[in-house]
Image 1: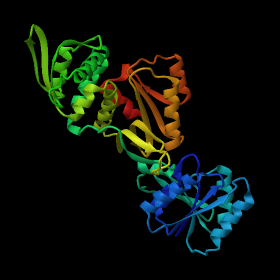
Image 2 (image 1 turned 90 degrees about the horizontal axis):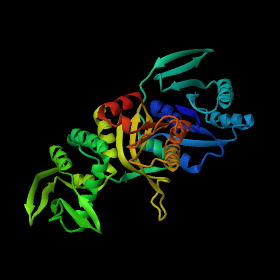
Image 3 (image 1 turned 60 degrees about the horizontal axis):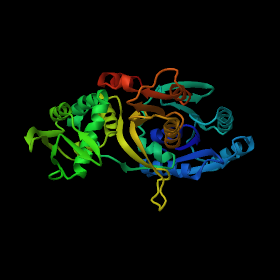
Image 4 (image 1 turned 90 degrees about the vertical axis):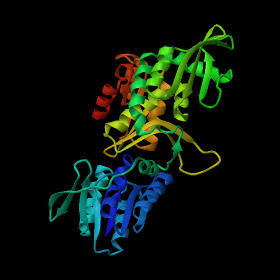
Length: 389
C-alpha cells in the first residue's frame, strides 16, 4: 500500500496518524512549497523510527495551483501501485476537495481518519462507510521532533512516587505561608554560606544570626512541618552559649534542593498531583527542549516547567511563584506554538492572585492561557482543574 497524506501545517499529528495506523509500504506527503525543511526532516525522523520499513517521500507544490496538485497526483499514479490511498484528514479544505477529485479519477481509495472519534471513513461508489479503529499513540517527544526540535533532558530530578503525598502536603503549607517560607529558604542558604553545615546534609546553626548585616531567622514550626513530611530528620532545638540553636539532618539531595530554592515547590507540587491523578499518559517536570534537535556550538535550549499529555494533546505549564508579567505569557505562547502547534494547551501557574478583569487576566484570555493561581493551589482544586483540561 502507498498512502498519500495532505500536509497540515497547523497540526502535525494529522500528518502521521494514517501512516502509523496503516504502516504502508510508502507514505507520500503532498506539501506546500514553503514548509520549513526542519519540519519535513522531523516528520522523516519520527516515521523512520516508528516505521523503519516504510519509504517516505515528499512532493512540494503550490497549494494555490490546481495544475501542480494534479501533476503531483500524476507522479504518484505513474508508479502503478495497485493499492494507493488518499487520506483526507488534515490539509486545507479546497486542496483536499481537489485532490479527492484527482484521486477518484485514477481509482485511488479515499479515506478520512478521525482520531477524536477513533473512526475511519471509506468512500466507495459514491457512498461511505464508517469503522471504529484503534490508533497508535503519539508521544510528546514525537510531537516536538515533528516540529524540528528534540527533548535533551531535565533541569531537575523529578521526585519518586513515594514522596508525592509529602510534597503535596508540604507544598500547600508553603503556599499558605509564603513569607515564612522565604525566610526559611534564606536561612538555609545563608547557613551554608556561614559554614553552619557540618557536612553535605547536616546543619547546626543559631536560630538567629546575621549574614551580610541582615538578620536570618528560622521558623521552628516550619521545620517541624518539614520533619513530619520526611524532608529533614533529627530536629533538635537547644541552648548553646546563651543562644538558641537548631540542628537537623536533610533527608537527601532532592530535599536539600527543595530547602534551598524558593521556586521549586510549585513545580514539584503540580508534578506530584498530575502523576497521582492518572489523567495523563505522560508527565514531565523541567523539560529541556532543543529548538533544532542538533548538538551545535550555539544550541538554543529552553526549559518548560511542566509538560502533560492527554489524548495526544500536549499541555504546557509555566510556573511563576511571583511577578507574572506579559513577557512570561508571551514566552509560554511561543514555546507551545513552536514545539507543539496551535492545538496545544497552555497554563500559567502562580502563587500570586490573578483577579478577573485585571490586565493580566485579560491577556491570558486573549492568548487562550488557563490560570492556576493561589486560590486553586490545593491538591483538591488542582486535581479538579486537571480533570477538566
